[in-house]
Length: 357
Image 1: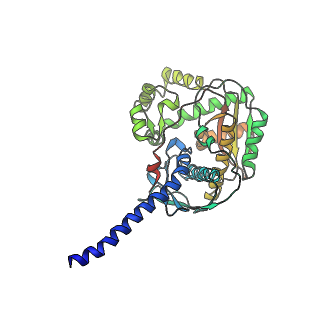
Image 2: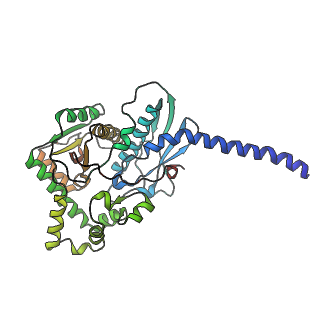
Image 3: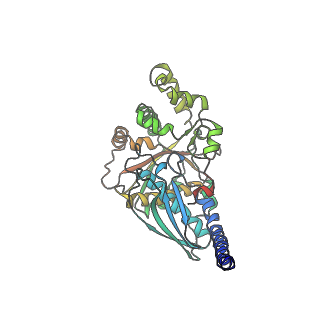
């Protein structure tokens, strides 16, 4: 009986070893692709994506329901955009490695109530000699800059290239370099930020993703690190932990002026508009935003998005009125300032192995 058992167990051990080796080999194919793709941007640097490797050519993309912001992003539109940006970034990296990434999206709203990872898309690598849209190095060059800019407006030729990057996906990019408009947008963003942070639910949800110390940032490798936000750690800590001291009076005025002062040198603001009613639209918006942002990276141009203005109902209405803009089927879904600055710090990212399921 012992001899028979040994004969049975030996092939099983060999099979398990082969299976393990095969799995590691498969992972090596996807690892270089994800080494770039996991640098994709996301709201508050939350990084909601997960990936399960099925074979050398197939994988399933999921989202982590614990990495959503259901109060601020109650439709899941902006996290769907983030998931789409991740998938589109993966597609661009794959093209640099000789593949087309065939993607089958679920087109379902993300669900923060799930107790397990939610499925987002199925992807397949298909060998191809199609020229990639962008060099993959731009993925790591691209970043947000909350530093002050050098005062130069974005050149017309760069704006046209950014417009062309989104036009094919049904979206429109417009800008203004008029000083009165730029100043108005900066002040609107400031007012919106302070207004939003007076809402306890908004503030609590955001505070969960603020990294108040270097140790916390390095341990968690996600969220909004004070260093990248270009704000002193002590001030961010005081503002969130003792908000009642900063929402009125001279402290609010000082903090307000300091916030706008950090945006000095801004000479161009711009906004994206396009279909934005459902997951199909949001996936398209994510593709458009990926390509649009990589065009900026190619020209060493940075941006600082003003997401609160879009999600705050009153501020959104003020923006539409200022622009005399009739949204119709082309809602405004992103507002930002643009310019040239010193190289900003890179937000930390989860380790690539943390992305795997």
